[in-house]
Image (cartoon, rainbow, N blue to C red):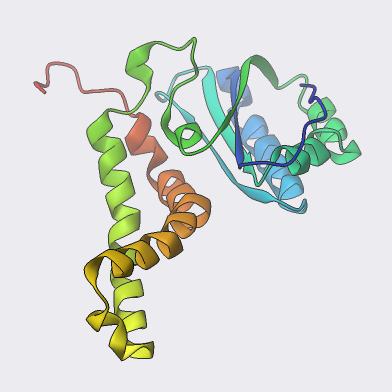
Length: 196
């Protein structure tokens, strides 16, 4: 996987599909975790995760995210990563790599994947709500306690301030954390025979 030299910008999510033979799963799991541990030492690393579509699947979908293209390039061109990839060359085969910016990187399936592999919109809405509700509740209580007069401000500026503060918190920290926790549910295939 090679990275071109680009300027800093929005967070970048890298989506990789790798094929792993069933008898190599314990080795591949340890290898992937060692890569996460390495990436975690690099500035701008925002998290990662990996899932299989079912217990016997050879296909692993792996994601990792960096704060911007420049910090991603530092990781991708590092000697640590090159050595790590070399250790895994007999364990996995990369079949697809895609980079995305913005919130869609946490939800959308790769462009050449079947449409059904993206989580349904209702699951995406639930995951956003699971992050937004507790953050908004905590913010409301905290601001009400620290700045009692905040509740007397007109609705428009109050909502403007709230969304200006909470949107980056949701985008950079809460949503990646929540989607990482519930990713197996988000990507689980629909049950056969279930009406929708």
